[in-house]
Amino acid sequence: MLTINDRPVFRMGLTKEQGKLISQYMVKEYFQNGTQPRMVEVWDYLVEVPGRDGQPVRLTIRVKGMGFDLPEPGHMVSVLVNRRRTKAAFDVDDPKISLGARYELGAKQRKAKAAADKAEFEALRSGERR
Image (cartoon, rainbow, N blue to C red; front, side):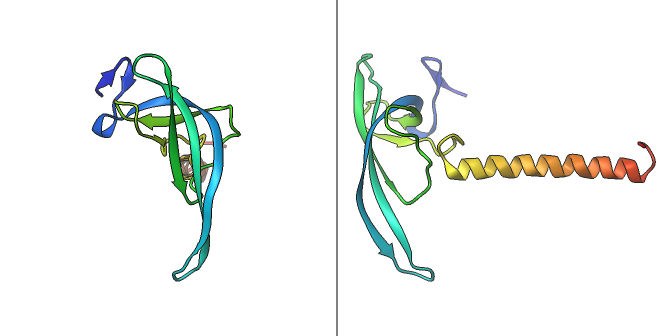
């Protein structure tokens, strides 16, 4: 994997950084119509990330929906930042903040446990273990 300053480079020059969550507020909420109407919330988050020159830069991240479980302001979160430090997004692959990544991690753990349980069951059934 390509790295810059010992940080892995992701798609289109984005780097993973730790940013400090400064503030948050709900921009709006509305009903999304469809087969199952649901309430959608739009939030703006202010995060502070290290700038290219070492000075902190504050960026706004807009989140639509409920895909993240973010800590209270003042805590560090995983973000993806572009090279010029003008845009940022929360890291959807971090199970600490992303509900989707947390679900995938849990699914992998359940699958591994099921495979281990099956192997133990088969060993007991064939008489290899008692």
